[in-house]
Length: 307
Image (cartoon, rainbow, N blue to C red; front, side, top):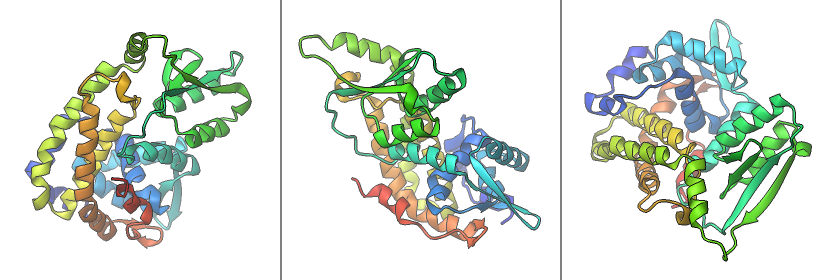
């Protein structure tokens, strides 16, 4: 499919939703792979990626450069067939997007039991291991209370164990469970969490998300398949960007009328309406090492069974 074809199928009213956003090539490709490619375990032709990326303002040169860099950073694995290059997620890249998926597509918040998970890093840990763990824990939305102490109220222990195992850090990290005592007020804890997780900036980001995507509800009935893909990718790209900065704190620790709850509901509504059309577009227009992209796998359809 020529790269200009998809861009020409995006109407001005839909394209307007991208206005003002900085869409970096690496990040957009990770969004596309995490949302649509990872569940299929397929490697996609570079030409297909170039076509998909153009409506987001990303040139073919940037797609090629980003695919090369993501391969070097162990996000992608590359395959060459004749003169064509194909890119799939590496084992490390697949693990990373799976961790993010557990948060992105879990639209129903779990009930908090009042406990916190604390991760304590050994003081004598190698600097490279410490930096790696810090990056991965922050990606999982842990809050850093001090240089060697991280906290989270809704930790996914499977993800945490995978992070420690991948870093070969099991013998250098202590994982504890903590709970607030009823005899002590929660106000200091609320203040600490507000500062640790920079909630003011997260709140502002959620408000901006709602302002941008709320008008898209009125467009749903008139979207083409190409526009459904474009909007789905844009939606998840921005939702992921904010969500991975949001610690997913319990209601008791959040400001009143927290916009993250409204943003979650809006994202679920839009994603439900966009999924069928966008999947039809992807299957019809993406080429992989196995031929066409496989039909919607159960792993994607299951994302919307929780509500």
